[in-house]
Image 1: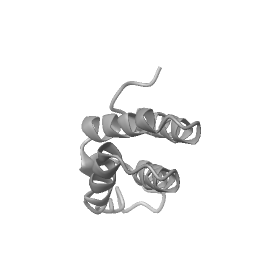
Image 2: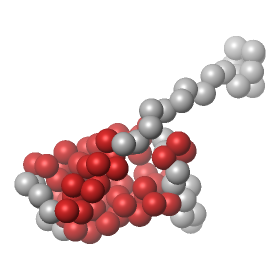
Image 3: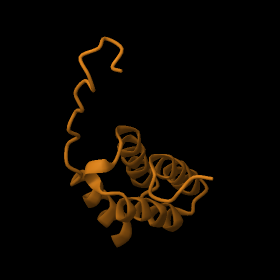
Length: 96
């Protein structure tokens, strides 16, 4: 079971959102993406999820979805703060 709000949940939800967009259920796709953005703080959103959000946004552009919810999603994706790189966790070469 994947807990809501965890990185795995975000990844699975965004994969589902892209699948919904591909099937033509763009409203559902946008809703799923908003759920992720509403649940996980932007600073905690992993790069893979950010990539999936950008890919979903491009999917919606390609589908010519111009409604307000898609524009809101685009604005939220573009407003995500830059990732702050996490440095080495320790001075050991293997990071342990």
